[in-house]
Amino acid sequence: PPPRLPRLLRWLRLSRRSRPAVGGGGLPRGIPPPLPLAMPPPGSSLRFFHIIKTGGESLELHLAAHPHPPLDYSHCRRAATGSGWRRNLSTSAGAACAAAAASVSGVLCAANCECCASDVRVGGGFNGLLIRSPRAHLLSLFSHCHTAHTRNTWSRVAADLPQYAAEVVLRATEHACGSYCGTSFDGNWSAALAEALAARPRAEALSVLPLHNTQAHALSCSTAGGSLGQHFRVLGGAGGGADALEPPLEPALSRLHAFEWVGLTDLLEPSVCLLHYQANGSLPASCDCRAAAPLAMPRFNHGVERRDHEALPAHLQAALDEHTAVDAQLF
Image (cartoon, rainbow, N blue to C red; front, side):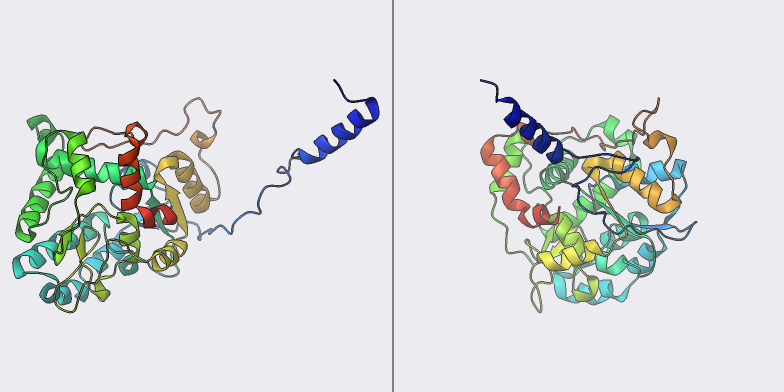
């Protein structure tokens, strides 16, 4: 039955108090206070740090058409020529494997800024990166590895010759190191994923693109500390391993918090709108959700079929979570 009138009036007053109030053009009450927002000087370049499989090429293509802020990769080229690479050649693995790994990492660091975060973070500048939800990130990495090994077609090769050339070099590096990205060559994607997630990590000195906490590794590795970049884990060799399949969380978080702009691949358009606001103090018209042509970022799939982790059976989802436990805390 409806409450009596005095009780009803009291309920309405309490209900009104509990609802967010908006007045005078302000924000609703009860939301958290704003976080400090880095606003670099006008005209500042974005020193972008690219974690693999997070959508960095989409960002690069967008900023090429909207050159504010301009991208600056000079810090990556400096990192790629650092002494850490040369020092690590003699301690991480066999000569052929270590030389191939250092060469691949150096080129990818210089060209795409796929480096270790501690090698490229420049104090006092405007530094940024993208991170991605862990399950989606692992599936994207595995699917690219699986496609490169099992499903190369002439149309895929012709669509992106530089990418195919890079994959050929990486496969040669895998052969030299005896370690393979994705670990399974089963032509069936689902069976290959299950095999890769069930495989126990081998006690190899250097592992090529293991499916464990890739984003935390990118943020915590350091060539000065004995690493050979994002794409490899130095797990053994002379002096022990510099990397781990489960990197420590605190160094990765500390480096993440040092970036002035952090975007989410899963919320790419809002993240890029935030980037424009930080860099320019204003928003492009396309960042208005009511715009006739709202912002739509380009998407690259590298000839790889997109997969949805929510469509996987529960035991494979649990295995994804086991492989990304540190990345999940980071995200």
